[in-house]
Image (cartoon, rainbow, N blue to C red; front, side, top):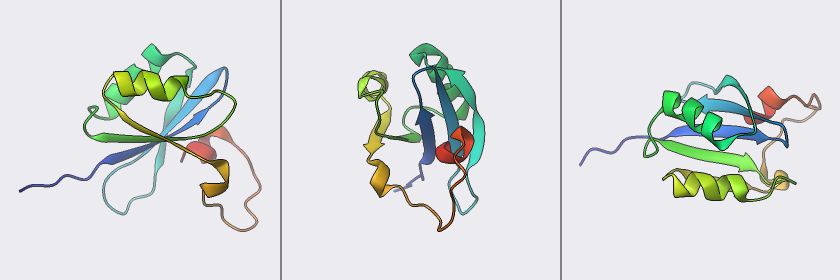
Length: 104
């Protein structure tokens, strides 16, 4: 049986925009894909360029935007998890906050 690794996609979700980053299977670090307005259809176009719904594992940080995005992605067949902010690993002394860095 052939098992394929998933492409891990991190989202930094805000009211107006979504930053998208992806980590390919293997040991390479994640890379920033881009930033789109907070529109599910535009996000789906970006995700389609990264891989199919079966290939992607999407994660974003829980916040004031709620679970609407997770529900919309689940309806389209994507695996999407919401992670509590306290569960996201941070390097000691890493205090610079940018959307791109958060999504990676």
